[in-house]
Length: 179
Ligand code: PRP
Image (tube, rainbow, N blue to C red):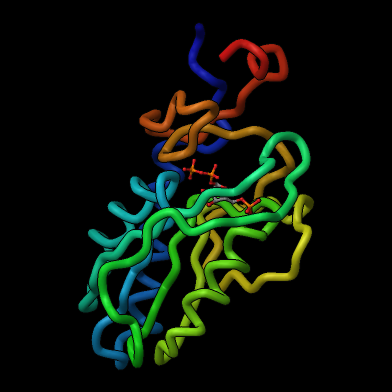
């Protein structure tokens, strides 16, 4: 099967990740340590690049979520599959997502993490599909706004394919039924 067409190139991603890391490092410069919580699986590459470009003390955590009924129409039901390992009370938390689509996952996560009384909680998403929003959720740092298309690469998958592509590509309508 041919490679998915490029939506956002590897070079453009790296430029934007550098910018985000610089902005976040500036914003948290006086905060001591920031806990980066990557949402598995999709955020693993973005988090790795972002964390390495940041210049302030940071701790890495992961959390895993499962969303039910995520076919063409999301039901919005979300379940915790794997929790973070650290106590986040009184710490500065930055949730790192590869993509915010309907917003249900991020909204659930913010509620869950807020109940643990962190010093602050902010959110960062590489991609944001504003057109698809079903719930109101605040995203403090956004890499790229995209249209409502199916995207793969740089951590994102389509039926577990193409997560390791170095760029963000689009899944063509003709390929959507093939995998
Ligand atoms: C994707 C993405 C977000 C979520 C966003 O995860 O990584 O966590 O969907 O969608 P929402 O805004 O509609 O809730 P997915 O469920 O595909 O799992 P994965 O990261 O393991 O691929």
